[in-house]
Length: 115
Image (tube, rainbow, N blue to C red; front, side, top):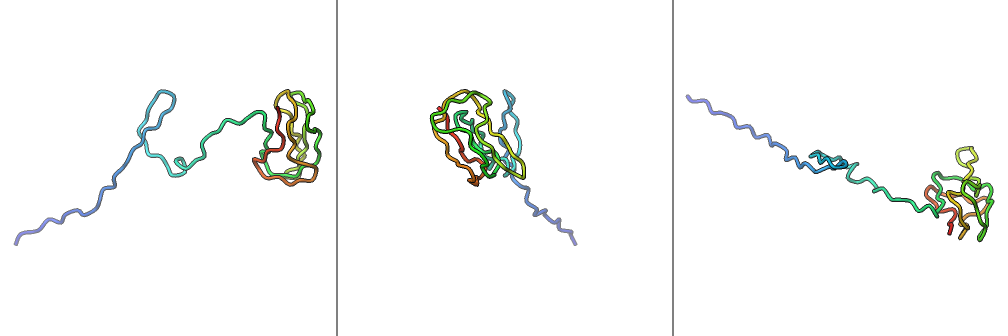
């Protein structure tokens, strides 16, 4: 009696490598779902003062049309039991103030626009 060889029925997964470029070097690699679904980097507009953390506006030191110097205090934001001074990123004129004292604001909220 002759022995029958069993065929291996396991499937080998198909691997799709993708090109990943760092400066001028190109690598073939596997990218994770988290990496593929990441939010793309966006250059921020220096004329927009945006909240980095959620909080409550304690004081507003500027008003529409006011001239400000770089580093001047524009707002005071209370977040996580701390008072954060929001400074003017550059010299300019206040175009619009989108917050008032006592406002609760979320992360990435435009607080002040400058010209």
